[in-house]
Image 1 (cartoon, rainbow, N blue to C red):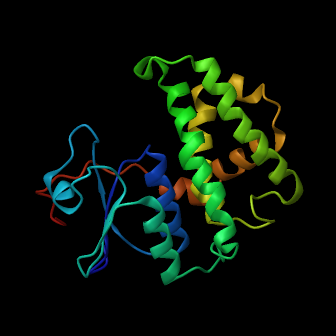
Image 2 (tube, one colour):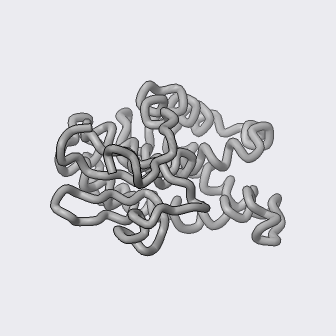
Length: 208
């Protein structure tokens, strides 16, 4: 890794961590990647961020970014060659709805046993948000026009999780715009790059 690179604590399948990794990749920022297990969090990560969730980005100057959107905005403020921030504040309400209502229903659909909920009820509620995305996507192909923005990178990892819970049920919604958009992002070289499997980081690694 580059000398003085930021340290990224990440978990490969976490959609919040995916969001951060996508933005770091788009900004072409090299990091020291520390893959962790959420059930066995390393003390070094907890020392940096006691709340114990990923992603956590520790900057060379000692600052710690503990939220995925903070990581994304920091990265893109350094370098945004594809203009992911171009839609500006217009993206904020849509991303907030993904992280709020949609994530609420996603969790209670995907993890119905854990939450003691009716998965069908939350599938339908989550699908309403997807239907709204489908309308946006039917015009230009991405959420804020013809080009990918931070909103697309921020939201599609959660739609991926919803779709993969039961792909047949997802496809049965008939949301062709969302399905094409999701599949295009999942098939992209960028997604392949950020989903490379890293070995589990341990404190005795040479890079530690």
